[in-house]
Picture (spheres, helix red, strand yellow):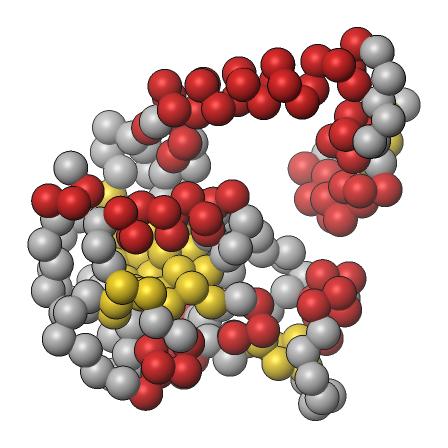
Length: 234
């Protein structure tokens, strides 16, 4: 079905390189959409649909100057600011699949959406952070009703495709459930091959330890970055 899709010469930005980003990239590749570099995406025009997969370094810079440091960005994201605005005027569709830390800068602001340079018409926010890095994600949508329009002037959502001036948003928070058989097969295989032995016998590679989110009522070191979220919901 993906190979039957025929798109006009649009430009798509994909953020994220984890499971979400790789899944989105696999979908785009299967649909025959060509991948280009971030630099070419910004500077070239194409007569076919293309996409660029951005890393954090492509749209963040240190506030104090200097080179982007991935480890520092993950530890202290507040030291960085977003430079995603350079993509706003050349992007038709945004697929957001990057994890967002509330301490990190937002991708762009509602004020930027109101400028004439803002070109994005469709946003697929797979991460679905409500009132997070993407201002148009004001609520989650559902699998039966996946789309809604966002009016940046009023900061409100409306029925999908109600006005060409609005941005159409897909923000399904349980999106992987759309592929239940594939997800079940892969999860089941990994559970049998990689999890049961360390879970029931000896965890020599630390798989269970690394995957443990809480222990004795507290977040483990691997998941300490979630503490602000826990504090906000308790």
